[in-house]
Image 1 (tube, rainbow, N blue to C red):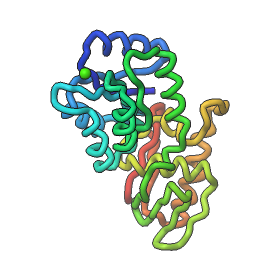
Image 2 (cartoon, rainbow, N blue to C red):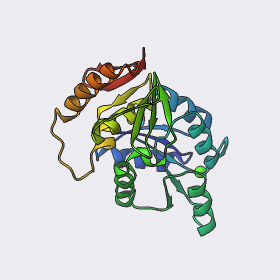
Image 3 (cartoon, protein in one colour):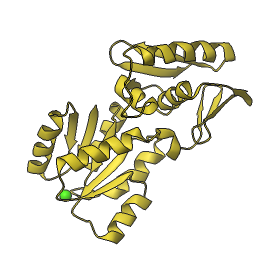
Image 4 (tube, rainbow, N blue to C red):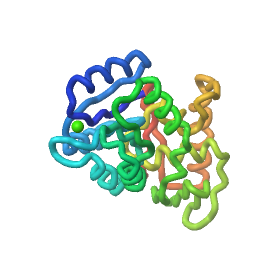
Length: 223
Ligand code: CA
């Protein structure tokens, strides 16, 4: 799993990155919103940890900026600004969770698991890609207005790929999109879903191709 940490307290950032690495989590760290935005364009993150008081602005302004750019990575706000109304403000602007400082790494881990097991689809708008229109909220896909019936898991994989089209989506991200945290995942289950999905997309003339980035993940491109 790979996280982006946007935090200007260097000691906290270093301690947190160290603690997360013990859980097998890779953390990219920046102090600046401008850098953070660039990083989200270059990388696929599973989640973003966001401070509010940052050198180049209020962290919350990052959330609508990111969503407008079509990136729906879960965001957990980590902040000393933890009054009830500040929490309301953070959640209403689109944060997926809000955790006051100081916090225990164990609680952060539990909240990360919580946001990652939510189907990413529930918060998203319709996605147009190739000749398809994907409605993640109602779990439906049409190709030029003709409904395309997909099993739920294939649809969740497709939605996760489509929302980051032209970018490699990590296997862990796709698995998190499809499976609950508690479910045991067969190592080749994802590849089997993708293989069946590819055939259905081809048969339907969906106008997209799913590329395998060996050992890393998959990437969806328009054709
Ligand atoms: Ca700060």
